[in-house]
Amino acid sequence: MISSFSNRRRSLVLSALAAPLTLALPLSVQAAGITLLNVSYDVSREFYKDYNAVFAAHWKKTTGEDLTLNQSHGGSSRQAGSVIAGLAADVITMNQAIDIDILAERGGLVPADWARRLPNGSAPTTSVQIILVRKGNLKNIRDWSDLGKPGVSVIIPNPKVTGNGRATYLAAWGSAIKNGVSPDAAKALMARIFANVPVLDGGGRAATTTFAQRQLGDALVTFESEAPLIAREFGSGFEVIYPTRTLLAENPVSVVDKVVDKRGTRKQAEAYLQFLYSEAGQEVAAKHHLRPRHEKVMAKYAKVFPKVNTFTVDEVFGSWAKAQKDHFADGGSYDQIIANKR
Image (cartoon, rainbow, N blue to C red; front, side):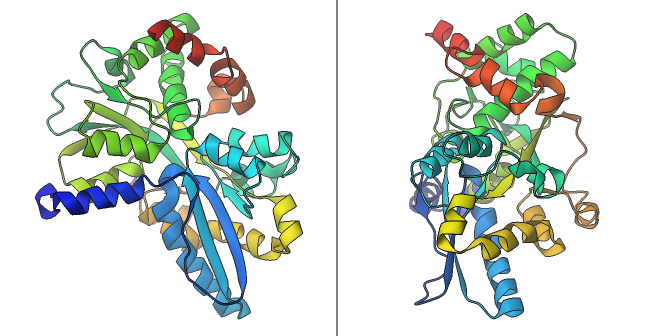
């Protein structure tokens, strides 16, 4: 319950969760040994903190080698930009393929076919976009269209710089298309929704802070995995709403080839990503409410993950590259919507 946390402790917790974009979190301090840096999206930090501990123990047991694993988290596009600018990531773990594609396009840090190197398009886990409302759901928010109603305030991170925000935008637009409306009507819905957004945060965790700590908004749209963390830190004052249709958000990963080849860490980096597909790695993911792809683990956690009617970016928008060009590139649909809002 919220009452079990002092205001001071709660502020410290959320301040830490909304840490600067490229904060590196060391698993351990060691005088020698191999280090790896995982550059990731904003709301994955708790998962990778636990996963790193499991993988480091596995690596030590199987190879005898000490491994220090560091993390960096922030808005996904900004994180990808940091890697392009020189942040020496051994691996990049994102929530959308375009934030790894750009590493191939700008500087050749990864090969163009990076997604073919691991199963499921190099995405070991998935999530879905959900709507989190305050207890009682006084605005009767049940689906995407409700977020565009007059008098509703909704918190969504900025789609220009965050994978969470882009996933929300595409989930709402794609759901409208799947329901048979025209692209113009889908765009009009998005205009109504974003007219109800009071602040565009630069990351999914910052949006969580705005909604849960600052108490702004009637609803927060975020990844399914974020809802349990909010419940742990703020109590049971929220309800999870699963829209009738939502986007299947795949979480792709890649070794950053130019970095690992320069640092001599390819063997460790590749093993780090491959272990994400193992039963042990998938267990950690499931415990952090990321949907596992391992059938046995998914069956074990079936009650945790309700069945939802999902669609993919490729299915509705053609590809991530096309969605980026049509909606999020400069002058795209999102920019047009925001310009009209002003």
